[in-house]
Image (cartoon, rainbow, N blue to C red; front, side):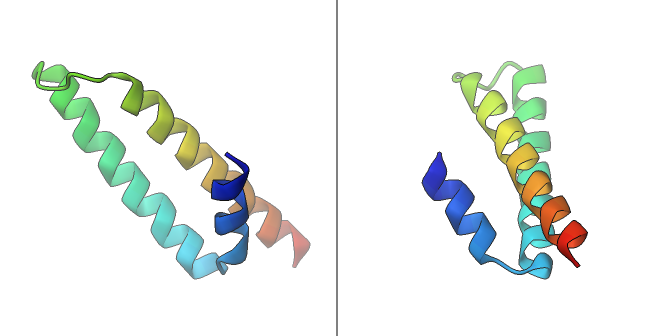
Length: 66
């Protein structure tokens, strides 16, 4: 977990925004798979949701530091 946060902190704001956007697309795809009962491992929904929150938090911290 700390490795992922450290990797995100190393990125600039534009890269973080792109990361959030790609994570949200992935989360949407996973939700659609769950709705059509094609998703076997539903814990991936939880991990992507937390990854989105982690990236948004770090982005907000970087923006507040300006």
